[in-house]
Image (cartoon, rainbow, N blue to C red; front, side):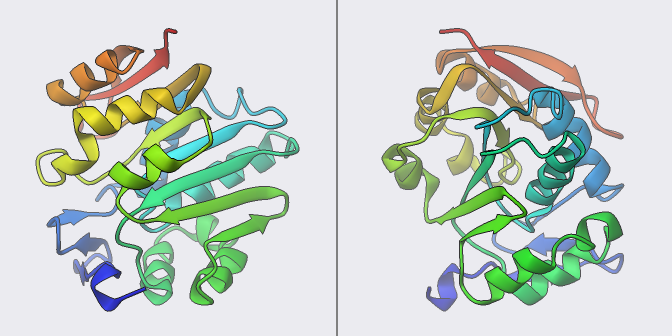
Length: 225
């Protein structure tokens, strides 16, 4: 991994990391873990849908907070076997920066040690007590097209569509649809019209739902084919 691929981070006084490339924070300034649970877990009807072999996929791994929230939710659901979490990330954060960011969320930080240890060693495929995680490094516009998997639930968590339009384009959203299992779902914090239209074109019935905190709306949907 070259230095240019490592995420460059600036820190707000309250400890929130900001990606300097996109000038966008990694998580909600109000409560990132609560936002993750509202948008990505509840938005995909989790943990109720967790079952053996269930597969979560994500665009934008960031700090790993969504993954850890999913892990905690899976564990609370009785830890069904064979559940997997696959994330696509172009600019991975350094392990020290991830650890510093997660310090803001004691519940997630308390279970993060095995993940942080693997990450610091350069390992991008690891197991958390039976919860299998793989982070695929590279531009998702190429890596997702080459992926052989299909997700039951998608967490679409790229930086703001206005600042990171590459991760929300028509072609990539079409790939999300193509890599979704029958009856699969997505959830995202954004309600941007062009994102919603792209997901509709990709085969999802898209609906607007109440957003988290000061954000009025988010989007969620179910594959209709």
